[in-house]
Length: 293
Image 1 (cartoon, rainbow, N blue to C red):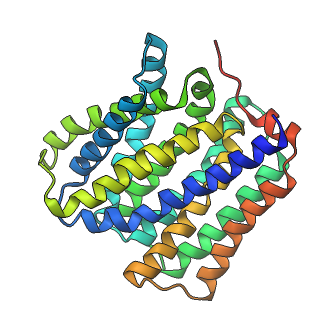
Image 2 (image 1 turned 60 degrees about the vertical axis):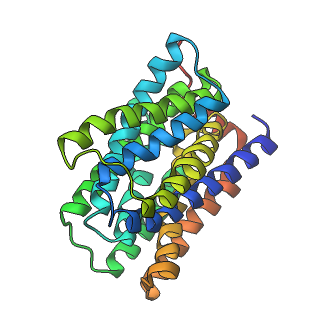
């Protein structure tokens, strides 16, 4: 892996993190007019169809591997969106960010070896930042917060699954399979819970943003970047997501941070800086999980 490729991958992850974080407010507003799981179903169906129009997935293996990672992705977004319906956009962004800590810990457990020291240091800084951000609002674990915590576990598994399977396949069709799996799973769950409904016109802008911009753009950036850097690195860079989510909630919903909140945001940014400046080519290569053929 060349240094220019690593820098491009890190930049791609930062952009993806911004797109993921900025959508918390968009989704929160949309959930006033549609059931959470129904929103997930329509959102990912739009993204899947758009991706398949670009490159249709062919072959049994891409569908099998995409189903595995898509299952984890469904768990993450079903839990996150359900939690977001009954908790604040800031809480949702911050608790989701706990996968930053869970990913390198789960990766180390699976490899039966300790994580890279710089990854541990960056994860610790991210965790401290998330604690300060969360403690700013005096967080209590409501039902919505617990659902969101479950989504953090699912996203951690998704990152690790991507590291195992993504390098086997072209990015666009592989992303399409994942998005389609989420939609296929979400529609029956929606029918059993809140019911499947056609999105009202007020929801279509949010579906367009999350389905096309995030569903195509951000996911493809993430999938490609993880073929260059490892899952622990991806998790740390994507740690900027809660900071971007809080910033968007501050601008759009007037959710304010005090000194501790800004200190937490600074720690998350520092974690990204630590990975970008301290991680060597050999370290990044060692962290990448080699696909099993």
